[in-house]
Image 1 (cartoon, rainbow, N blue to C red):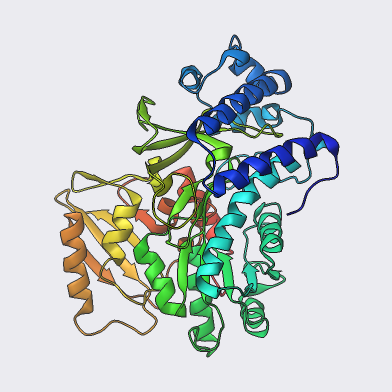
Image 2 (cartoon, rainbow, N blue to C red):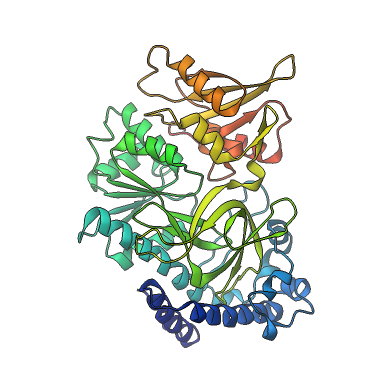
Length: 470
């Protein structure tokens, strides 16, 4: 694993990696983790108060040296709006200490700075490395597979992070951006074939868009490519959506990691297809998404994380805006850490027929009884009697079977409790490709009952340059 030569980082990293190795081996006792977490919590808060103008104000009066894990919940939240307002004032160290500079995509607001120093890079990548080893050993045995990485932008961390992780596990890596004007989908498909890539890391939408583009090039994704594993991230991927990718490619699809530019990698996947919290790096809490009331550290709620690595931009009690389930990490895969299941963004709840649905429930209702779909969109209207009406558009490259529209409409209507129609267009609206940049809701849901919000408008603007034919 890469280590920096600078002594100011190296001492911390060597200490961290010793802890990480004991943690992954199952040797770290609970009291040792608590001791580590409380020491790092005090270090992080003291650093933020001293180095960050934002946190100097935000945490004024807090005594860092007396903080405990229980006392953490008395501190104020940090929000996405705080990051957009404070910008560089959130940083706790000087940019001179950074080894990488990244930004958020900025599609729905100002792009916020996300520099990283060696402490943060090593601590985050260590858990992704363990994830890849776990999955690759299960699928490929002793062979190091060839990996293709398909990221969103040049100032996104994905390419650097996964390039480092590939080096850690001994895999060759090719960085291929199919939406880049230099690469494009035809070149991406050519590289996938010529390099006989075994693993592709991308968003769920890119995986299915590649399959659609392959068909239009006269290629069979299952026969003409070597891909055995898709590691997906960036947007929600329920088991039903993962099944569509598996069917298109004859591959195995994993929700590879959960995190964000602001938080780094919070959880990474195991060979059993579950996400495990990188517990040495975070204190995780659950709160009520509407009131902020504490819900403990297991169950379902909005995820709040406090970063334990005293890098350039540690966040304290950061509200992720994501609804998750946290449970015991006892899935038998060998990876440590509580299991995380991402339910969807707290803002992506949708009311249909007087009932509230989470994002995953909508996707499950749409794809639960569908095979070989390359995408979907849900259009919501209100009829003259004020009743909700849902139209589901499904991309089925082979076309629907006789009577399939009526059968699927009946199934979806029963799941959602509203009237439903199903259509099979030749091509879906390109807005469905924007989920990783904006939100699942803006990409997949066209709710004509209400005026467009700023996220929907951003998705529409971005859609003009998306789609595998763009």
